[in-house]
Amino acid sequence: MPLQSVLRSGERGLCLLSLDAGGSRGISQLTILTHLMYRLNHDTCNDPPTRPCTVFDMIGGVGSGGFIAILLVAFGLTAEDALEEFANLSVNILDKQDIDAETRTMFLQEYVEDLLLRHKIDHNLGPLDVNDRSKGCKLAVFVSYKSNAGSTCMLRNRSSRQEQSPNVTIAEALLATLATPPLFTPVQVLKNAATFEYIGADWTLSNPTQEIIAEAHEALGADERVACLLSLGCGHPGIFATPERASMAEWNKLLERLAMDGERRAESIRSQMGQLGLYHRFSVSRGLEREDKKINTINPGVITQHTQAYLGELQVFNQIETCTNALRLRIKVASLDQLRYLGAGHILSLKLPPLTKTFVMRKKPWKFLEKVLLSEGDSRSIAGSRMLFVTGIGGCGKTQLMLRFMTEYRSRFTHQFFIDGSSEDRIRSDIVRNVRALGPEHSQKGFEDCILFLSQPSRNEQSLLLFDNVDDPNLDLYSLLPRGNSCAIAITSRNHVLGELDPEAHLPLDIMSEEEATELLLMDRVPP
Image 1 (cartoon, rainbow, N blue to C red):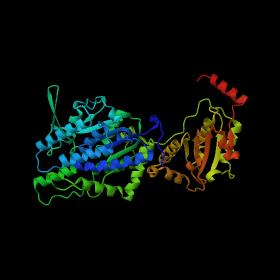
Image 2: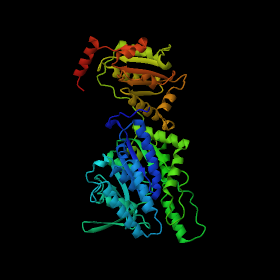
Image 3: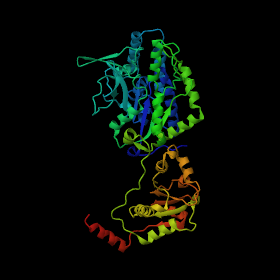
Image 4: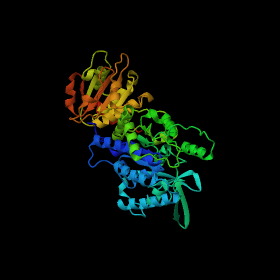
């Protein structure tokens, strides 16, 4: 069974969710999200099931995607419950035929009032008001002003230093996200004797992924690293053919479809971030194409069927597996600053931890390291790899000795990995991070792919992997090591029993000799 992440909160990479606009096709987004959450909860054996607001650090959307984001964050709904709510909304309001915008807006207002009542949310509650349902998840919803429809403003559940968010209630936010002409009338909000009119931002911003990165950059910190950026579309829109008749209505419809096409932006983002292995885009490829109708409707059951068929495709199945692992393991990949400004062209290379300034060379242990790791003879043991075990009490210098060795003999090894061996989850996480950092061709590799890569036979090249602090006696270390002779593996541990796996490659590091201790004391007395 896949392993549940045990990373501490400060060690976990961020997870962001972006939801496109798409009207009733939002059912497809929620079907995909429900599938992902089911897989995630199944893998981690969570009871009760984890909700999206506890998995993602920020959820944002536009149009129907904004409505869904509010359900997931402000209401704290599970993906399954949000799907049920949104399907009900689609059938009874979004896809209702032969009614004008005023009547549709009235129906939406009644629906929102009932929604708040059923979930016991105060009608006057605003996104900024204290709400335990969101579990700390940040909300970013995009709407437009009627008087300036070409720009967007953001509805948040946090205060922003850059700009003051519109002072609206959750009810008004729900209405504004869907208030896209000509289906709905603008939402009027009276604040401080002034009336503001909001409309949905579908035509201005159909895919808000880049804007959500910018918002996370401000809200969560430029240096915070992202593990998963999940973007959910509402299906490919089909082919954009110019109308055969030159009627103004048909040209306007074509321009509307072009404006609401989030797939073109998704392709641009994929070209920038795809090689990082953190960007995951899902959007049904066939069956949800838009047609030239006043209200472009598809039966919710048909939307679900096409989405289920899409999820059953082999390539999509593998992508879902990769995304689920990213959400579960939360391996830090790239910083928000890199994603926003540097174009995410590459993963920043990983460095070894720093050496202490008071390192004292220990001659006998050093010669032992050279003999085991550098000798030309056959010093292979577990899994066919060259092995070294360094054991001793905490603070005796095991890690510093190995780091000095790796620094001195950097040129002797093709790659050098420093791996936190404190738990199976940390080992998996660090191996994946190190391999992905080697280049874009490795960006999509999972743990098993990384082990296979490290196990590939090599005549003249060898990498050095340091597994540090492997102290857990119940850890099945053998299953986490690469096979073959392409890697030299060094293990530091307080567990002396580990060295019994290969006594000839075991260095029991004792306390310093009198000469070494004297050198250290004299070093401490030298002013910096």
